[in-house]
Length: 82
Image (cartoon, rainbow, N blue to C red; front, side, top):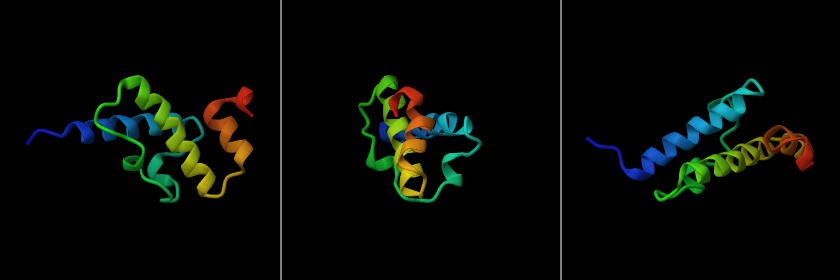
């Protein structure tokens, strides 16, 4: 059975989230289940859109999981974003 476009976007987004989070030693599934990638995506997203939304997904999950807002921002978006 062929995967839907939305499932493919989900898989790419989760992979990008894991790539981002690996830099701080965790994965998407290690964090508290406070949001869902499904809430952030649609089937027409480009790779650039996926990269951008993955950062937002990670930031949201870190912050909602109890991380300090500034620390979450620095870890996901970089020091210049704080």
